[in-house]
Length: 271
Length: 268
Image (tube, rainbow over all chains, first blue to last red; front, side, top):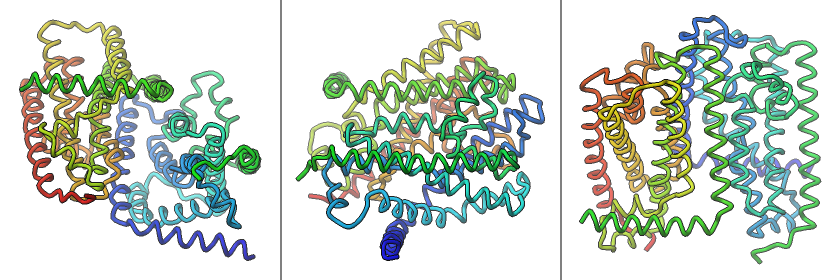
């Protein structure tokens, strides 16, 4: 109980810290809509040019809904600065503050990120609500079970995103610098997570969908969006959620194992 | 005077290259990142063109040329200016800008051209490669006049982009905590990443007109790419692009100097 209170306190302090820079927050949030709007316009032009009602099983409306929903997915699953932060702590020797205090690095960072996400979602709720309201016609509101599955898929996406990046950060025990690696992974993830377009479009390349389905990345953006759009239903939905949960657990275990292994390797540079 | 600055720029470029070569691993990784990014853009492009024959009125090879043009332009901006401008807010916050102001060289030149990011040079080659490939696919004719026009419009596009970058950078003197120039630039240049013809609709069309003629960021890649693939459709738009580049360059210099007047050497 005491342990939970400790991490809840970290969550509260981090929340206050995040909200200190409100103006910055709002400005960049608004600017962030620009790429989204241009992507919509690009897809409009693609549908008009193709003279088709459906592309890869998506109508024009469903495509816009999908592109909006992947933003929500990424709101939960993207972890900017997490792995580079961990690697920096390892490199600078700052990691010892976690070793000297009765606090665990990964659980501490999870609470911190949780706060970051809550603050981010809270402060961007209004512009996003306006955007979703603007495009309300492209959505068919799903039933309560789909809502529940959607929420679950988002929470699991958060965990997969967090522990995947944590693993990369912990690799800093051996690599010291992971920034460049992270650049490559970010670009790769942007594509294979389905953030750029629905993965069904890649069906034309043989084997591409099978490979992507075998990786955890599509849970970061594509899968939650497809759940909301009710394109994953019944057994497919349940199986998807179970595999997502399995990936989350696997990544938690791998990150903890790597962390333990890394600590044996750690020599606390920086004095 | 111009010769002196050219010599100085070459020395700075040489010095930057030496610095870059000390971290060859980093150099290679950056190239891999850019290759991945371009590869992704191309896969996206080809995937889309499996579904449609044209985007707005841009056919597959024309759109490819546009992407090449954008990539080359982006590469040049990143190589020559972005890193310098990105560091400007740090110079202001720490007070290190003093060292720049004390030197007997134009401040704008020193602030925006000091470091050449050679790791972005391959982007330019990649972009040119894509442009060349699209050119070959399209079997377009290139006469001397068109080639000169393309080069002139490309340079004017760079002038426009540089002017806007300088304006965004100057804002950091007022804001002090402008740490997101890199992000702001990335978001702002979204507008030069697509053909302006895709902006159709009640709100998109006025937006397109605004960002083409009032804040003409959309002309940066659109005008040179369009002239190449569609020929000289309008006799005044290229002139407008060149004229606006000169105006934006002038205004940005004026704003930069005005911003320097407000600099209070915070850290010293």
